[in-house]
Image 1 (spheres, rainbow, N blue to C red):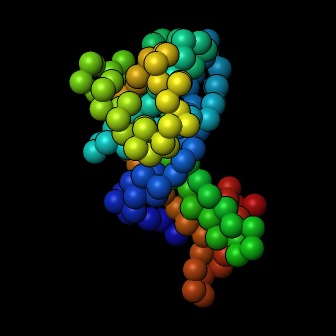
Image 2: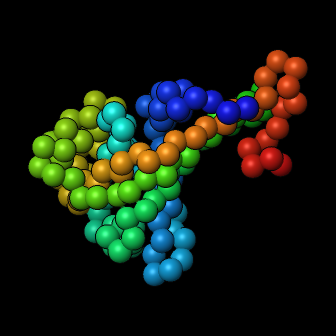
Length: 142
């Protein structure tokens, strides 16, 4: 079953880990990330490296977050398509504050290194497992 864009945003707000897909030297490359949602954008920090270089080369990215409950079989999956860009100074400060609020001091030492990236949300979609009398499915339609 589809969920609304607002439900998908709320799910992202509560998710602690997402995966970002980029194109690196013509090949897909997916990595986990800590992130925050601020209005119509996703903000995160990244170190210099393959993921960051790929976003500079091709800023179109896809971000996915999901959950699965082994006991009930319930799942939720949200996918964002957007464009990545280096954040400006005001956004860098905001991102650090929001990351610390969401994750606490666990990320503190990591926030002094790397780049802040903002992904403008161009499209957001979400799905949940069937409920009520609907057939329950597995993520990816297994």
